Each structure stands twice: as C-alpha cells, then as structure tokens.
Image (cartoon, rainbow, N blue to C red; front, side):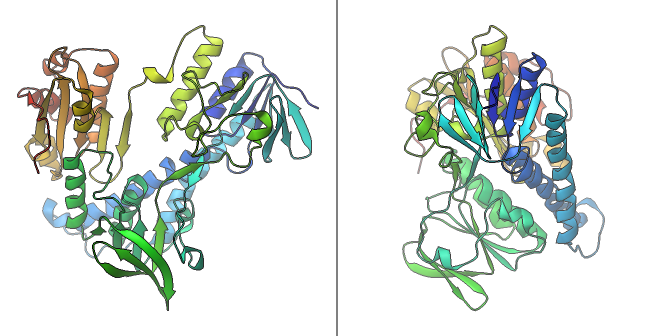
Length: 461
C-alpha cells in the first residue's frame, strides 16, 4: 500500500497547480488521471472552442469585406484544416500539463481510474494508495436528457463535437445557453444551417431579459433560427434526417442532419466510490463542500466543476488558490469572498459580473443603472462591430458597484475594469473619474456612469 502525503484525483485546472505547490514543499504526491491531462478546459472546453470561435470569426469578417472596403472573394471553410488547427492548440496544452507532472520531483503519476475504498484509501488500477489528504478534481461532462427516441439517433455533445471535421448540412442544437449558442453561431459561420431549440421562454435565462433579447437578435441577423418555449416531445430518424418533434404552443417537426445536445452539465462523481469514503453529495451529484472546499469528511477536499461552486475554469483555478492559501500560507480565504463573473463567447461576447437587474430588485437595495449602446462607443463604431450595449448597476446609497453586463466587442475584457473595482470595494465614482485610454471600449465605462437613473421596480412589458 503506497503511502503519500497527498493524493490528487484529476488534472483539471485546480489539480496540477495544487500538485506542483505541494511537491515544491517537499511533499510526496500521487496524481491520478484516467483520461486526458488538462481536464475539460484544455480538451473539450475553453481551449478548443475558443480556437474554433476564432476560425469562425475570421471567416465571418472575411465575408464582410465589402463593409471594410475590400473583397476576399468566395469564402470556403475547410473544416479538416480548422479542426487540425484546433487539435494542434489542444495538443500543445495537453502535452504541457502531462509533461510537467511526469517530470515533477516528488510526484508520481498514475494513469488509471480512481475509486475510494475508505476515507483514506484510493484504489488505482491494481494498487491501493493511502493518504491523510485527498483532493478530488474530477470535473464534469454533458448531461443528456431523457427524451423518447434519443437513444435511436447519433447525437453530439460538446466533447464529441471536437471530432467533427466537416460542415453539417443542418445542425439542430438542443439548449440555448453557453455551449449551444457558441456552437450554433460558430457552425453557422462555418456554413451550416442552424436551428437552436430552447425549452425556456428566452435564451440564457439566467441573464437579464434585455441581454437575452439582444442575443436573439444577433443570432437572427446571422440567419440562425431560434425556437423558444419548446418542449421536445421525441426524436427520431427519417432517412438521412434527424427529426425533432417539439411543442411550441403547437406541435411541429424540425429536421436536421446532425443534433447537438447542450442542455447542461453533470459532475463526474458517480463512479468514484464516494459512498465508501462517506463523502456527501447533493441531489444532483455534486460533492458538498464548505466555504473552504472541505467535504463532509475531514482530510478530503473537492475542487473544480465537481463541487457545484462554479462551472468555469477561473472558478476552478480560484478553488486551487483558496485551498493552497488556507493550507500552506496561513491565510483565510473562502469561496464566498469571490464575485461571480463569467463570459459568453458568442460574437460579440458577453461579459458579466455581480448582480443582474433581477438580482438587484430581489435584494431590495435602492439601485441605479447606467446603460450605453455599443453603437455610441467610438471604438466599436470604428471596428464596424456595434451590436450590443453596456450597463452598470450601483447602490444608490453606498455607491457600491453591484454588477455589470457588457454585451459587445471586447466586452469580455472591458468588464474586468468593473470587476477589479468591485474587489477593491471602491465606489463607482472612482471609475467615473478615471481617465481611460482612447480609443477603447473601456473608456466608455465612465460615460455609462454619467447618467445613472433609478432602476425600475419591474421590467416594463
């Protein structure tokens, strides 16, 4: 029974950094990876999708050449070359993680599946490893809904989309949030006909209604069909077509050549033997953790997507920072200290931090709002990318920034000006008085704060 100072299960964003930190302190560490090094982000998430988004954006801009005074002729997308570029970017990152761990002093890598035998024992292949400190970083995978007939057709998920080296004739996308919208717009720009089917009454329903409406308009202008409030009744196959029968206030059939399931994620916790370790999970399978990411069992922590505290690379990395600071730096860092922040990488992107308008109303705080159309932002106008808007929420009494949504060119970058001010607990007047560089999108943040108005108590309908 090999004994280690620590065992890390999984090599997503949190795991390898924690391994390197512990090994650097002279601890003897075992790291277990059953599949691909680097986890979701590197292999099937951020890295490959944003590489594909970049290819789709280039094709889109080339088609708009006339808007900029040139003609690129007929734009032909070679998906085999697009995929090869994506694969190369992924491989470099994947290999870098694997190489760094396998060459790390005080670290042994096990390439096998891990299962708990007890709170201190983990079976890996034919061996049982023991440690008083075990860190779970196993990530998640696509959640597949129970739809009659789905098992009879070949469908795609965010993972299997990575193997696509052709342009689907007509891509049906079930799900209108991050994954569905990014792939939908991407493949429309590659040349596919695209239909997005969303069960809710609007796209990205956790965002404000004006954000959802603006995104729907952006997609519609690119020729993407969107079906909302669509109950998927059944899925079948007719000839070469996948047929989705939906009820949107009336039953209809949608036909496509390929189907992408993008209805959410689930944690990879169902085959770890967590019951033998007595590690508690919630009703969705996420490992229950406290504010310092400790599980229900002393000596076991859960980091990244499997703990339900965030579904992003940056939250996983922050999980590592919290655990490392608390264990090795004598600090007291907590999950509740972080401010929610994320981006949606359609084009133009959405960057959001903190509260939405709905959150602010629910909080009961007296709030002010400033909003500015991207068509009034000189940088956006000069680039010919004027879709979207910027809006910021502030507390009318404390002047604290409550949140912001930037839907527009560079919105995913400019939003950090607001986020950093929020972490500094600075009043909005600090940003209002800041001198930003011209011409940038960020320079219009003070402009958006110039004419704050009371947040209406209810959205006009």
